Length: 559
RNA sequence: GCACCCGUAGUGAAAUGGAUAUCAUGCCGGUCUUCGGAACCGUUGUUGUAGGUUCGAAUCCUACCGGGUGCACCA
Image (cartoon, rainbow, N blue to C red):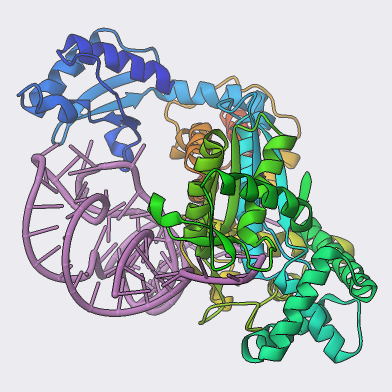
């Protein structure tokens, strides 16, 4: 529909004296202004030395001469907008059409045939899986699903730091502690101790650096034993969290696997002058490219995170050479770091560099202060999910469900509340998480969306079979108009890597449906419009289900 | 010190350079509780400051004020 209208407007504008115009079609905020509007006349008025309103009138006259079928009327309004009204019949017919193939409603094909890798979450074995990882996972999973919904083949990747100083710090503390427990909480504690000593105690620092080297070399059997056991218990623990969150990774990358490749690249391009040796370390002199200098190989000859990143990227493209995009989701404290990496990549492999995309998120903070697993004042994902779950179970405790179903509902609702909190706002900013408000189920919330969907599902199961309606309404509601926009919303979310457009849309849609529900009797055997309303309800339920799926939120059968 | 990001009702957010800045929450007031009231309807209240660009600025530019993050061998 959008394309047809844009085309007609283009022709009309051309006839009205605007040669080859760019047409921007938008939905006016105020529905009384029509279903579409465009500002072509205002955009080109100045260049043509005309009054925008007069120009708009001319365009409308031309447009009216050959109206697309679904358009009812076009008129000039305000400072020179052209407002377009679509016939109610068109909307009603579209809804009926969609109701027959609702399962795929919203899927688009702009990425058909493309392969896209998205790397996200990236927790580190031996460290806590904290709420930052939870945030990255929620965002990365949603972007993955948006891209999938757009037709691409998505490869979900997770990159885990199984070597590096953080591991050495943990193992050092375990040696000092004298005992070893294969338990993530214990490992987390040891990491905090090792980290503190590294900063404050020169002797400890030297020992940790020594252990780090041995980890890389795998030269000490006692270290290897602790290392292997600790790595295993961490990874199993992460798997349990992914399951709960609904993520299935296609590929796990480990720092230990990409380190050598990274070192090789740095050494090769050191010869070509891209890297330099400075104070015993191999660095990338970022200042030459408007960035800052970073160390890629330290003075002990070990690769830093930077070199490993290069190795990782090279490995990704080696395994999947066709990748149209290699997206990486991280916290925004890594923004400057990634700029340097991409600047270096541009020198090493400009083609691959152009396919890299870094998306960063802010922090999810419980009350105040920066969260850091180094300082130990972290909220773990487990704690946060647990908190949500117990608040949800408080609300469902009087419901008449058996305990197994209730557990599932509590899980789905808690995760919905959490993911909604993260995805409702534009990616990048901090999310201030007030425990009380985040769990409140009133108004904007994941459970509100689930509830509206569940209500619609209940009606549908009572209605039985959805039949093709014989009667269509003369006037459609805002609900139908909104429903039809779903694929547009997906496309915009995909183009801007912005799940929050979908959240905003679904929240709007659920509110409009709840209002429709309150004002219309949907099931009524005597009402000839009832079959139509059932079709609308079906399209609504499926749009919500599909939209929530894209956000990584499940819809329970009952709640 | 330098660089980047962010300042929108009491609170949390939205807004593709467009029309009267939207939504939720909060406060106050209301709704045949037949299809699931975790709902619906109404009232109240907002673009950090000062300039500039533009027919039009929350959005772009400059300065200032306030907050966050990052800047050499951590990840």
